[in-house]
Length: 220
Image (cartoon, rainbow, N blue to C red; front, side, top):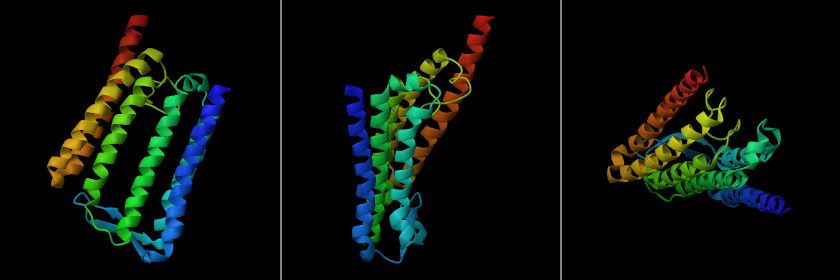
């Protein structure tokens, strides 16, 4: 009963974030330009636009779809018993991710209202915080089909899953620190974000494969 009550509270907070994103857009709709800036390059310059309707309602729609999906996952995951073992961290991850999307949505609305700032530099700290939090979640994650480092080898073995996620937790936290360091060289900040994540992805795929092969040799 306590767990159910806690999850209801998390779900309520989750939908509060979605409705906040929607209401912000509705309230500001008439003050926004017909064509809205929607994408910025690595130098923080606008290089993409979309009609006002989509500029206002696309992000809340994505957030709503994600919130619905995250509510369904614990019911349909074949390994739902494992998912329940870290449900608190799972719910916290959903809230942090939706909070990040609300932050991006708010920045987009502000820019289109005429408030000028370097979008890349403004978003980088939030992305770094997201990476660091992902590191915390990975440390707690148990084998499941939807959240975590899902390779054929991690999904086939609890040992490979646990060891890969332990390394993944450390690498994502390191990526967060490197991403923040990019603020010292604003023109190249995007590379301080992208390169560590790409390297982390490759390392974890290879690492999980090598662990699995090691386990196979041990079993034979």
